[in-house]
Image (tube, rainbow over all chains, first blue to last red; front, side):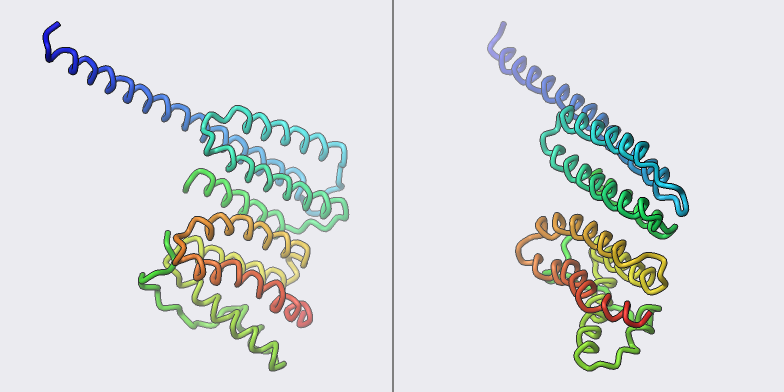
Length: 134
Length: 126
């Protein structure tokens, strides 16, 4: 090994590690984005199912769906590799909790309106867009 | 997305909105002053360079009209304001120190005036 090959090898090694780590970060970020999109779909479907004007409130089905949502959010928070993303997921969970509480209060009294459902979905889409940095 | 400093802000338009037409009917002098402050801030927010500030102002106005038209009730309105506040606190806190006061005035403060001054008047009028 001549005197120039050692620094060159070190440089190549550092470059390879950097390139590999960038690829891993991109891959993980893509996975994290997909998780957030999946949570968005779940939350919109939840609103579609229970924010229906005139629909009789089914407490059992509602509670089951809320439990399913809680489990999904907790799993997403536990699995999140980007530590900086965890508070974002916690914020999204807080929005889900607030939506569930408001829907329960309104649906159980038969006070759902089309405008309520539409505005709730707009808020959900907005907070998820912000979570994804859009 | 800074909202203050030395940046130029779009000239707010003073075209009357559906909400303005209702609020302009307020006769009581002390209430009228609060309503005027609210209308001025809303116009300023709707013309701001920050998309989030503009979006917040447009959402607030739309929901006040929905409340006036009884398409949502006060519980719904308060719930949506809490959603907006949750979203905006993060935005305001993320602004550079010199922009925070203006960002807060055009977001959280506008929401506060809407809840404490505008909504009670709107409810009395419908």
